[in-house]
Amino acid sequence: DENLPALGAAALRVRRTDVLEKIVIPRMLAKKDSAPDRQYRQEIRTFLAYYSVISTNETLFVKALRGVKRNDVGPGSDLGRCIKEGCELFKTKEAERICRELN
Image (tube, rainbow, N blue to C red; front, side):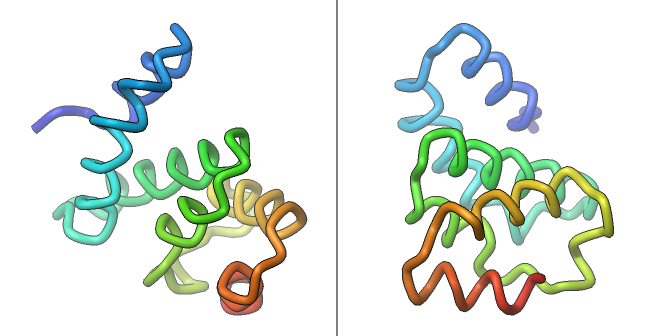
């Protein structure tokens, strides 16, 4: 199986947002809860949360974190930092609900 977080990082590095948004992000969303390896799921969720913040895409932020539990987010983790930034940035009811659940 492909390494989606590495592929996403490479696409981001060369500013290929078309590749990210048409290929990588949809695959990540499909695997964020179903990939067999917990660490890989966390890497996917972290990338999705990070990209949602830098692209100010609130819909992606919500999709990336839907289903994530508080105990899935380690204290001081990259995912936790992305969630904190997203919670400061996004203010819809759905985003705020996710923020309450994860903070």
